[in-house]
Image 1 (spheres, rainbow, N blue to C red):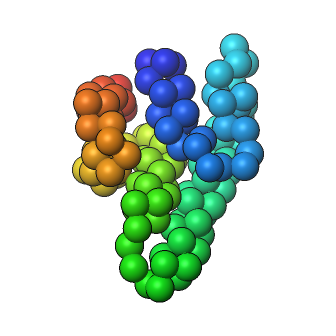
Image 2 (image 1 turned 60 degrees about the horizontal axis):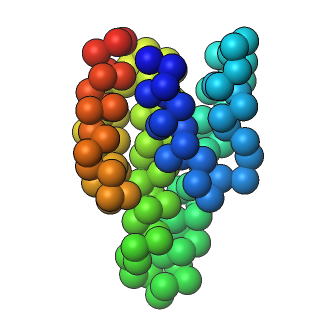
Length: 116
């Protein structure tokens, strides 16, 4: 299970300035409150990046903007997983994987939903 979370975090980490892996990869996990705060920061960062890219492109969707939005959706799934409600965000996480060209990793989302 831990490896699946790590893989999800690796996808979210791209273009995120703070180090997420350190809080999930260690033997002693960071407190839930800390992990939730980091997931929330990742959501906000990727949403803001998506909005900035959208505005910079003249309010048009670009591949980079779509990827930033997809990473925000994956971070929202991580937040939901940590709070015990991943199924609510599963569909958007699967669609986000498709945007990122990682549709083969949809099993990751299904698997994490089964464990909760």
